[in-house]
Image (cartoon, rainbow over all chains, first blue to last red; front, top):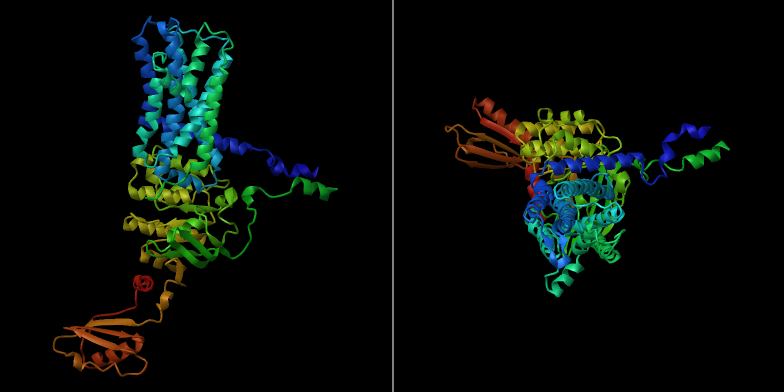
Length: 274
Length: 330
């Protein structure tokens, strides 16, 4: 009977309390708000991939790609743009926003509050995943209704797993990359260049099969090519369901591990003193 | 049976109730603190105690170890050796419970510029278990007219006031204020002082770092001066560095008809330790007993019906003492 009079302690052994969940929601919502009020972030995160989707798609209507078994261009490039979008909403957005907030001393301020560090990252990644989900919906909707790309129910589990693994991999790589950037203004090219270069060699906008073998191998060592190929498999009507590509997923998971190690080792809450 | 049940149900208090808290009268205790960066000994065996409920002012030139010490107290830096207790916690591993009870206003740290004043306050309030209300915070720093203004549109002074409000969001017992009024206009500074005074009357402990001596004079219960990584003086603003016992300065102008030699001789009078110098009409006297010296002087001048115009008596300012203390050590 007495236990009922002390309800306060009942939640204390729960790993995440309801209060923490509320805090996490607040944190995510505020990160979302900050992103949507930042024009540059919207340009890079949303406008750029959608522009590629529209213009690249419009200029290749009815094209079949002989180099990859006469595949319809739309079937090839919609998953490519999906991969590209996922990288820009996760990696690019996280790396730049964390670098800017570190440079401005916002991270140091947050470190001085009771907000647990994991919750800070969870809020950022949460907001990022919401953006990714939005982009995935946009790209799939345009792909389906403007370009008539089939979204196969039988490969949907693979598609979802590919997207989740890709998002996890590129989110943690974004956090890792933010540690390299010292000053926010100089950060943009350092962050953007690697994934733009990878986009061009990884068969995202056009097939990589015409590239020399060494370049294909190089692309394959990084996690964009595996992401694009595994997404492509989910869309390709000639690939049998469930269209899971184990090696591609493993490459992405390996990079997730690398990103985690680098982030844990090098993450800083304060900018380097000059 | 009941007793056992109680033990099972209430093993410990909530984290925010402060495990490790002891009700000592000292908010901060530092003993034998050392911190080096390479060969540079930033903090070199520093001892310091800050009492609960006082406004403690920490003065020192740049590079004296001030920031390093404060950042060790705030939990941003790890010390090399020594013991540090802040509200009973070791700041290095006080964690969430420790951070619930302190507030930090850093010298330069940004606020998410895309948020409005209200949104920023609400965001940081959400990090604490028992925050102050948003309106109360806004009123404390007088940002009533800018509640819905984005941080990016605030003036430097307004942003700094929001900074102060954010430091107070969790209703902390101990507040670190690092040069809180830099960039304020005089009226805003007075208001900030008023806010800090108000915190003192609520029993909060304030650890204040500043370069403004008038601020230290106006606010501090005690002042510490750090130089070369050690405390070189610690006392009330009026007594620090022997300020209350050092010589005073008397200044006045003599009418041109009167020569300095006509003045009563103070130099050989007992207790006065007087030392007089004149430059044209202007006379300066240094003495440890300004009351006696004035008595002699004014008795003489009133008797002769001479006006000592522009008469002032001054003690060294806190700034004079501070400069003396920090120069000695450099």
